[in-house]
Length: 115
Image 1 (cartoon, helix red, strand yellow):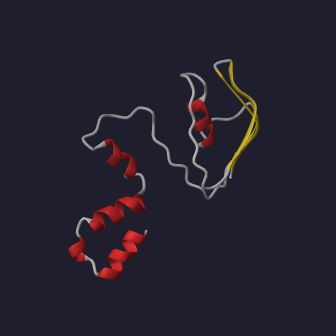
Image 2 (cartoon, rainbow, N blue to C red):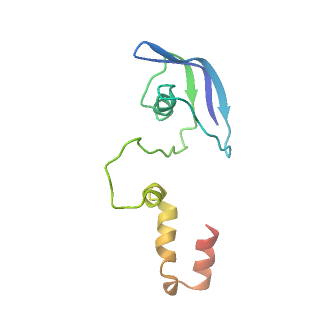
């Protein structure tokens, strides 16, 4: 679970979060919206460990992997969906194997589709 407990963060002297608390449980799917400057990127920076809070705490299990993508990246020849999915190594490996099903037996195909 990701847990914010009385989290306070300032940026440039401006308070973005003050005594914010919440819990995000495994399997939950959420969206984070807000106007520019509301603190969305700051919250993610704190979650990734790249920013200290001014008060309170932000906790997540150390064994969890947090997937993220920078707001701005260099232009690539790759489709955006392929770029995002390439961050999931297992998915990418499975997709590449499934491109040549003739190299796989039925058991291997079933396992890959199951994953």
